[in-house]
Image (cartoon, rainbow over all chains, first blue to last red; front, side, top):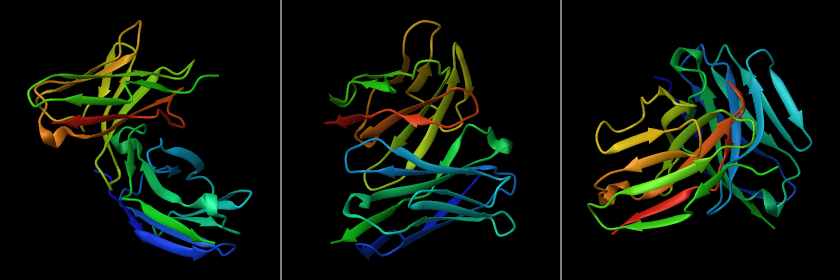
Length: 114
Length: 112
């Protein structure tokens, strides 16, 4: 099945700096890549997603880039703020395994240092 | 516009008891997914259902676990004869079609 790897597992950045989280996937047919933010004890919340027909998508301070050739996608958060501290999960969905089934990465714990 | 609802939020069971977790999808959503999250880990897909049908249960343990999404009422994830290893957060998500999945608040199951 699909396998998603996520790095780093923990990341600390100074407030105002940028944070980058990277994921790779194994199934070249995967075509949907969402990112979720999960605060302690809370539900995963979708923050941005990208489909394979585009290479980049941006929403205010958050952007995602996709490189289908390398099977690699990244989350970029600029001008980080304390409320960005959370665990971030990437995921991938492939029509080969039922497009609705999300395979998640292992998460990145992001800490913003005031 | 109510989001995905799950209840109970916390559930404590003794080994050997049954656990029933309920999920009401967002209004207009007919696709339901269940995921399990162990402490300090990511989410693992368990099962995908549409009304009255199990579409993909490739992530469900072969024994003791079952899921349903009846024509009326919430989706239910049922765990029979719970063991300590079943302790986890169980999240339900819903979507309109093969589309964005929105998660519920989760049910935290503790098996004593």
